[in-house]
Length: 364
Image (cartoon, rainbow, N blue to C red; front, side, top):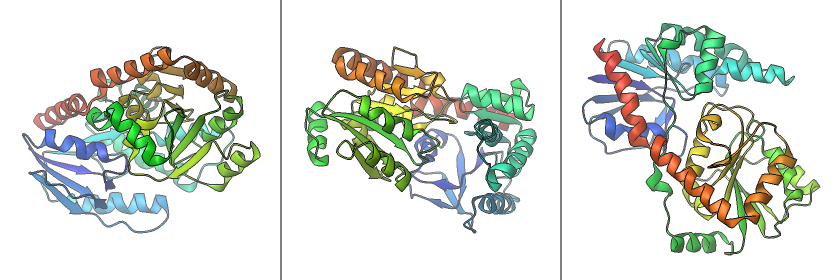
């Protein structure tokens, strides 16, 4: 089959790396055409990249222009199947729903927060494309519920297929982990917490920072990969935690940071299905997270991590202390986390599920 896939950015350093990981599975049988604003080069045969211009600095205008431009460019290509995120292309055959703008907007309103211009209007495009799509792939049970609740999408139109991860990229030997700690300037006695995310407020970093004074371990360090802003640095200074917190910035070597860490902390407000939690679990880290789309699917409370029902710095600190004081429990939960990935979330399993939906829609 000739398959057209629309994605704004197709890069290894972004969440779209899941697509690059799955392309080898798709191209065993089919020709794949990627329509993107930018992409990282790949030598995979039967993959063809097509440039879609990206203009405007305003996010919403970018989305509107990109969806119109990609639709025009693809118009006469005669694809057997098209797949796209809900706001990136008009009327795809398959809509890949990794986020729900309406769901996020409703959550913000409940919290008394103002919606941006893009957040107010994006649900209109999202709804149109979800209604037009022949099939919807939702990346979590929570996203499926939101599509049904906010857009009245029939349940039988939605297939839940989670985001995936390449577990091989997150497998390091003990010797390699020791060398990486030396490389980043940490000792073998340091107990390292890891937080990964660009949108620091939405992902709840403030609650992690306010938990730090309650963490008993003197050699504890918190590494923050992704975002960095003065708001959160001010909190660190106010709490006198400068010697325990490292803002690593927007890094490309997340697997290495996972490899040197002991615990992953992620008290997010809203997600579709966080890639960061999957990567942490693949690294063998116990995950402390709040109940959200995706985390409730991934984490079995007390087995491969802790699922917090309330976003509380005290609750976060209690779980951190429990894991840092009990090496056997922490190691056991980390092993369980990696086994969960191997059993349910590795790219080979996820790619087969997505390919099945693509082939079914293409044959219909």
